[in-house]
Length: 579
Image (cartoon, rainbow, N blue to C red; front, side):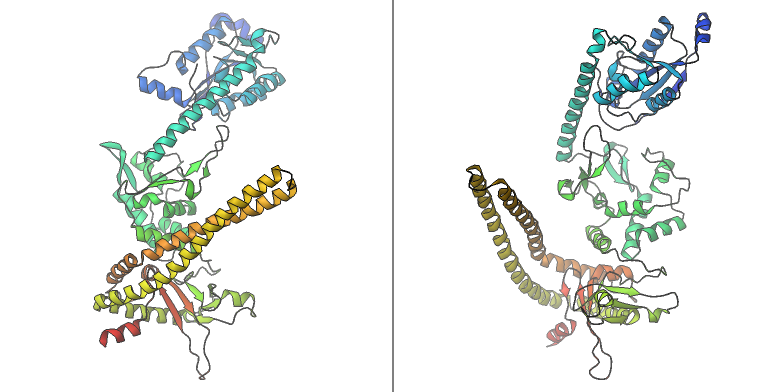
């Protein structure tokens, strides 16, 4: 039996090749202008087997199929034999260039007969194969012959015609069985940590000494780092794409083609035209932190080849499998920025604070507002809740330049204090963070225990109503309603438990986070002005209070939540250190 797979790996195909007819058949050729379609197909797995064995499988190779079909056509004096070939295509799909070209010729009325080696060469989807044999071909006056299966549509009353449907079903079963085996092998490999992708991400290349090993491609890696840096500086994907095009940096596809590396994508007309989706893909790939991520996509069945994105919980991740291009903390910060996704203004102007500023009362974002007529000093942030409904929140308005000065001055004080009095800062903040963490962890663990207890209660309640329904004490409608209510509550509790466990882990890492923040502050000792990168690395959020005008002057306070450590009371720390 021939060996097909459902893999979507497309090798070069040769849809149409006309074969010269012997001279003695000239009279027959003049009898009709219709061609005889000789259809050959070889699956990906067949091709792999041939290469693995170092020789062609004489029962299945394209060359053997061509020779067999041509000899049959000549022996039976079929006119104008013309090859339609799909080399490296699975029989479970009919979206094959050779087959589609043949189908176009059939529907145009140019084909008199279709001949294949056997029924499986035409396809391995029993329903569609039967549709073509029993409907499409007869409707277009096309005779179909499968040589090895002794099938000929000109004789519908033969025994071989009767069992063709059964053979098609077996061909389909073979494809499904092969697909199951391949999926099982891929699943086992993926769970062991072996990479399932054959395409190396942009920024890496295969080690010439060991193709299974990834090493950094320095030239491309610099572009990856630049993309992450631009994102940290507040640039969005479309802005980053525009900048790379302006800098004349080749797209990943164009770059790989230049290097002679195979890629599944077609090179664009403009090799410097980056797309927003390419930038997003790079920014979200965990491979750049040195991780192997398996099962990122899935397909519904062997018939539906559309790749669907797998949820995070269904993926398997292995860390430290190859050199990292991007540091973990930078990658994590970029993911936070990506989640914020602040809106762009109509003017195209942007602020490094966009997505970081919140109302101190309603906790909603402050929108960055500007017009093309504004000078920089006129740009401002305003509470989104207040702008939508003035009754829900008071006006929290602050000019962008004022916000920048307040935050930058506080950041300078923090950086200076951390670098000058690191030991004291560590002791004081450890004590502060430990007290906060202990209380937070206590609250989270209490709620976690309650949620786990309630899930157990719901399990027992579900068993009880099931028994009551089986005994007739509870009717089916009532049972369906109650069981759905319990299931929904359980699902919500399970999500809450996962979130609580994550929060507890975050709190338990507070001391490690403190050390990481100290290292970041050290990097900015010589910083002379506020940069978007420094802002994103050090600050997590800025909360703006409503202005106080009770003294006759407008006064406004902001609270800065620093990344990893929260609020830093610099004045109190300085007093404590000097005491």
